Length: 179
Image (cartoon, rainbow, N blue to C red; front, top):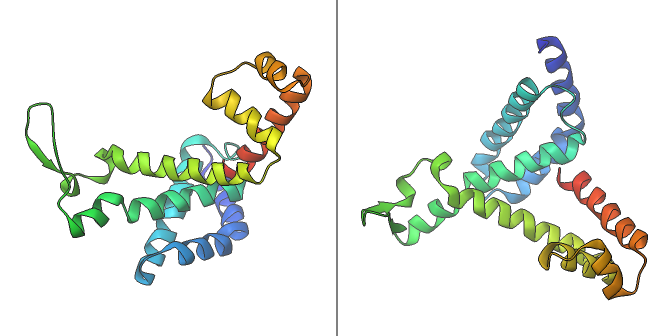
């Protein structure tokens, strides 16, 4: 990978996204002293992604950086750290050994990733609530009930092409926004 291209692409993305990212982090941070660290971690991960995956990897600059920022915020204020202030979060492994989740390294803590994914899913659900009822029905039938497009078309008395259009158009919106 050409370092100059990576640096140029990083600077381009930084210039167009830094104000929105800073606003998001400022709004979501529990402690103002953490803003600088989370902001820096966000752009360090952006640079690492550009270096590792190439400068053409990112299709929507703003959505990509905002997702990194959200993940950094959620990880910084991990559920286990919050809970450990009030109650010890102890689980037992297969051998019966007690493990305090607050003592684990963040990368080894699957709970954090689960929380991040659940928050993302909740954001997507809220976004879908702004869509017409037929689009919400299509998503529920397709993703929650594993119905095929032809089954959905029959259930909703729509053409298959109409179901596909509504499903794929909304998926495209979601990908663009949450990429």
